[in-house]
Image (cartoon, rainbow, N blue to C red):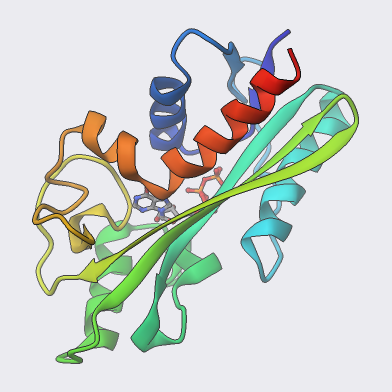
Length: 191
Ligand code: ITT
């Protein structure tokens, strides 16, 4: 049986498909003919992830999961956090990155983390899986791979930004990879 991955973000879909491989079949929102802009109005990743998976359960009655994620910067009291996708008021990532760098200015505290919460609804049951990766925000973006804030984030213990790494490497160590590993372990335990 196939699960819906409730995302409108093509990069997330591509990353998660690469992580799952052939073991679990996914349907995208396009595959099920869902064109809605699913509301996300909560103050936490958990709340927003569950809103997205609940929407699919309510309207399509299918097993599904959703990913809510973002970048938490310590010197900005955890912002952009749940506002990561439209921090500047627009979804334009050049503008969002520019705002983050402007707010950080010359602050020497550059520590941050990416967080993902996955909300899974399967057979009427609700489950959450999370992942985080610590790192530092640099002052000038580098690299063209990945998406979102990847050009300004260097994971701890590495020298390249997520946007400089090959996708296979980001997909081994990312916040999303950690959450998806937990999801996969759970799905295997159901078999
Ligand atoms: P869906 O809600 O449709 O899944 P979205 O892009 O709106 O897609 P979120 O609400 O979870 O997703 O917003 C997360 C934002 O955080 C995303 O748009 C990026 O700007 C950023 N982000 C999340 N994961 C990231 C990653 O792996 N690398 C870089 N930035 C990421």
